Length: 409
Image 1 (cartoon, one colour):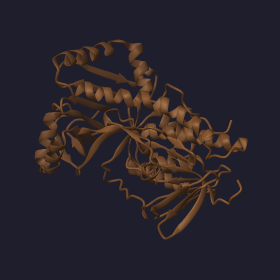
Image 2: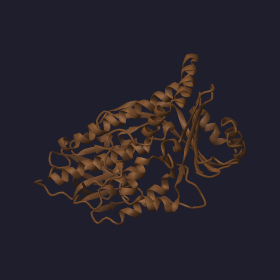
Image 3: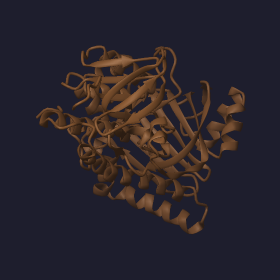
Image 4: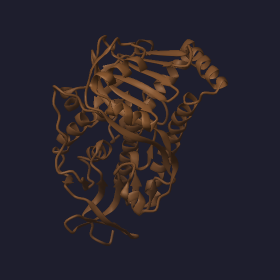
């Protein structure tokens, strides 16, 4: 390039997805900066649990293992779940997924988001080619044919060949670049907390579909579960305002006492739910990843896994471009990433949105269809195995990191 640049790649947003990409590009010839607004990392205590957790698939675990992040996650806390049990509150439809049927030790892990973030930042310290720029807000962005410039808080200006937007569902970079999103707000909010139950969760991810929305119990320890209760915003706010004893009683009843009584609860928080997919994932000098590109209902627990697959795919494209001596910020270079992830993400996004609508309907015909379909699928072993392997990230056009392979052949 004719003009001097400070970095080959600048990643804006140092959450799970952005920091994972920074690690994926560590120890490569690329000069990388990670711009993060926070001045301090989240705190974590072995005696308490964080409110936000992720259901990490086998594919995402492979990414963390190849990048050398997994040991730091495991040393804190990661709970493997072996089974998944789903049922419909309006009928007799139930389905059970068992890792033993697949010849696998588990289906995935439930991990606190803060644990993942801390492990990522520990690993970032090992890379000489990655600079962490924090705390910095992005204030202005400029694109031209040969590079992009970012003006950060404190009047710091950096030039780069490529900017990666990993700055969340309300992405400032996406808005500044006038990239359109197609989607809508759901009529639901998610209440999240963690609880102690009378009975063991049996290393099982449980989910009950109710008309107002799904209720999930995700195992964090034998008698500790993370709760994601999706319901009408008014009910979510009401539940968040109950005293602990009232909330435990409401939760026990909503879950049909499957794990006995809910004995205690942690703090509660409520988040609005929405769906969208960006019309473009790229433009010259810019690529979107994770929630900046797409967001979905949490009922399948796939949001962060899609973002990590974006990371693995984009890292593979950028390393291949570097090896071939190509400019990483050219639209021609980035188009492979967009085609790759658009096709893969579209299927998951549409599937989850369809499930949300199907199980949110009170039409008699649809209730009969979903209960009958769930029972039929539970009996179709090979089909059921294919469904769960897809959910585990073991199907589709997987990038090298998601297959447990190095970026370098």
